[in-house]
Length: 426
Image (cartoon, rainbow, N blue to C red):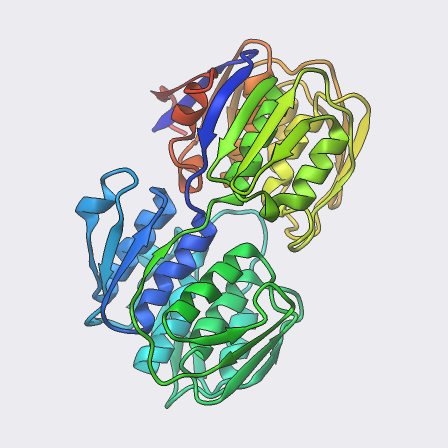
């Protein structure tokens, strides 16, 4: 098992490129199940979760060009001309919650699906009941048996569906199922994230009729048939935001390329308040940090609010900011597991319920720490970049789920960071 070793205190300088978004790529891959033919994806990120999802598609009968996938930045083709199965097995689904996204497409194409209830990071409950209730309203008969969702239908039909809370994967699953349903489906209180809009835009390119993307009301007029397409995955806004904060942690300046600043308005606004100098263009973000940051309060919210996937990272920044900050997590109930590891590095953080009070200290100090989930891993990388001395981060397989070669990218702009084999069996 690997670990990351970081010698802190090296300012960053240069330019760094953002990879394709994991959270956009996974539903796009699921959408290939909606029709037969050859799809081609550009800017598909090389990540553990993406590889797992490709293996899942292969298990269902798709032909994957793994040779191209093994080449960095090469387009990857997927041929879904024939499906051999409608079952997503536990062995693959257990490692990744996004696997539930095959449920809607399989029902649309095969009128039946058997999908294991998903696993993934232990950051809190992410129930799939809103997916299931929506599919039931569209005419699906469901049965939960031995850890699997068993679903059957004749032909899905349009329905008006209201989500109790905005759900990204729930919106995506129902949107895919509704693309070829009979009649019109209206999603109320739908998720507004850029990744949802990206999926909708891909479906429209396939021949779907979807409007309202980026708003709380999405309307899908079902069509009889979709077609395969070549499509590009949008930049990863969470990776871009992590790199912006890396400058806040380590100091220096970076031009972050292949990024969409319009996807990060709430984040960039908060970081400007904290003292970062930020300029943006259509597809780049320039950030500079020459002095200690100021504390700011943060409350995570569904898009377009401050994303929960950047909460751990900004907490690492606030650990050495001047003053007192309160960070409130409203999305997941168990997303403060990084606090204990930041405290090992000297951070002064107290938690109560869904809020954390962070009293900034002058500097963190390096220590051996252990990642607990994907974004917690990123927060420890940021803490290590700015800390005095050596930091070792164990269990970085979490990090590999969502960041493509992050240590190589950071090393290319001046960070002293490297991957090594761990000598402890974490």
